[in-house]
Amino acid sequence: MRTEDLRYLQLLERLRHGQCTYDDYELLLTRVVGQPSVASLHDSPWNQAPILVFRNEVRTQLNHKAAIHNATQSGNLPIVCVAQDTCKGKPIEDPTLIKETVRII
Image (cartoon, rainbow, N blue to C red; front, top):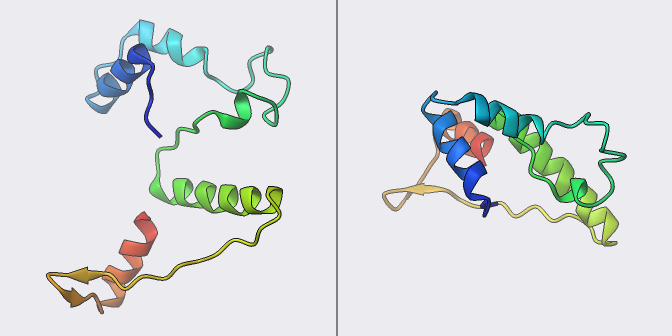
């Protein structure tokens, strides 16, 4: 998902470099779940809001849950497509590398 909000995009860039400002903090406070104005995360626009996480494992778990939820909501079964990853044209067979490759997806 790409943000079109220039102010938020600039905040993310400063965050990557550890250069956040007080204004960035104020902007983030407007996006915190738990604000009194948020009645339910099931309602628009909150059900379409991006979720910021700091670990790939958490992101992967959220993506899996979202895929299952969206499939259920649309009356479809989720489908898992297994791929054979390659490096320089050769299949990756190292179990540790395979595990890490799958983990970051």
